[in-house]
Length: 111
Image (cartoon, rainbow, N blue to C red; front, side, top):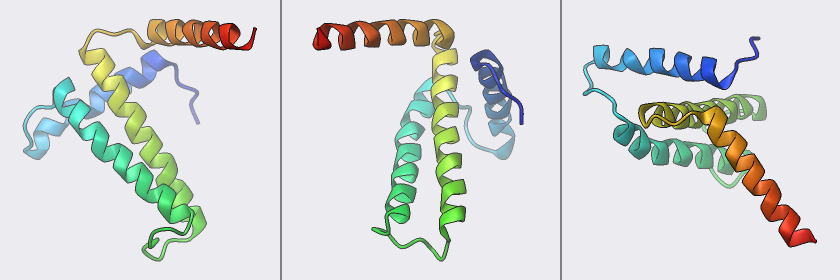
């Protein structure tokens, strides 16, 4: 298993999404990906409900549901990386800023 950097993951997502046109769908933009993100989050919620036995699991056992959970998280990450890249956002910079801001907020609230 490869330990990807954010930059490598972003490139892998771009390469994958670039092939979507070949399946006959319209070209994906960041706006389309942002709309699809809600669908992906819904899919994650469905699996969460299945894992907690609040929704029919379609005959899947816990191991299969955990694979689904992992895949849905990866789908969400892919969408986020694609949106960021299409918007010209460097996620390495964005993560540095977010972590620093989060640490500042926690520090201020716990003093």
